Length: 150
Image 1 (cartoon, rainbow, N blue to C red):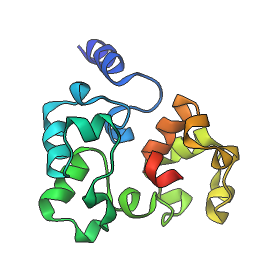
Image 2 (cartoon, rainbow, N blue to C red):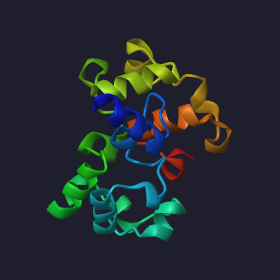
Image 3 (cartoon, rainbow, N blue to C red):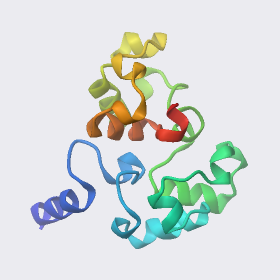
Image 4 (tube, rainbow, N blue to C red):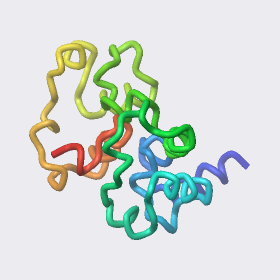
């Protein structure tokens, strides 16, 4: 059963090292989102058009602490936490990064020293459209997406 679920999730969420909740479901179309994630997206002011169009919503302009309890719960359903939402984990020391965030950072070329000094690897010089799918997914894990990258 676990193997079947693994293959099912890979087919829905695109496989690879990062997908689903780790990437805040950013790689999924609205039709691929589980029902609870669609409900969460609606709570955050999104609908199919804004989700699939990667549109910006007004709640994305708020700090975590300014979100309502329902909005924070919805954001957590989609994979967000306070540090990813507010600062893309830049407020965390390397050793305190969640496991998926540290793996994503490593896949982009970070290590403990470059993270500590805020020294971006080569991906930091790229426009979003120039990045590979894997680089974009790793950045999703860290809380970046097209509109907060550039």
